[in-house]
Image (cartoon, rainbow, N blue to C red):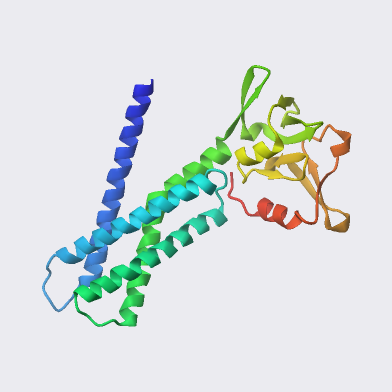
Length: 271
């Protein structure tokens, strides 16, 4: 089975590499023809421009890939929403801009050309535009798969007293702590004792789905039935199923976490 999985992973990686090289080549050909096209002269294949575009495209690809792996490790595996996606795209474009500067000045130095801000600016805009297209083509599917895995297919492994249970995120309503014991409450109102701490769950769970409401409760977004404005700027959450502990019957969001909660609740991708 491991041999089969390794073979499948190798084929997938090889197919992904071939696809990336094809996209890079097509974008390089497009860029070189766009920048070197002269209607007054006969057609000649822009070999130098194509090679330059491939080199620049390779550098851009390395930057985008390294930055994607960083975001995948730090943010995207837990939270895929428009904020994290835009952070990835704009930070990548920022690194590409920094890399573009020495390439441009090296090119005009080799060509012994005069620096003209107009061509510098247009070249930068064209590079960033093509970079956005390349990022969308190369990483759009990966980002969607991260979203699908984390939100739709995500699972939590719960171990307690020698028993291991695998529970889908979609089956979890919330977690609550009582006398240093953390309980997992499912949508059908079943309760499971876990060996987690809420702090550990904070590190494990998908941030798009789960919110640390207070020191005692982490709630799944689909468990929120109603949001009520309370006194002193607080929010009161009505959950389904209801919290069994009478001391937790009203789940309050403090006025200090109110803004954070509303951003989390409203700024999400559909699951």
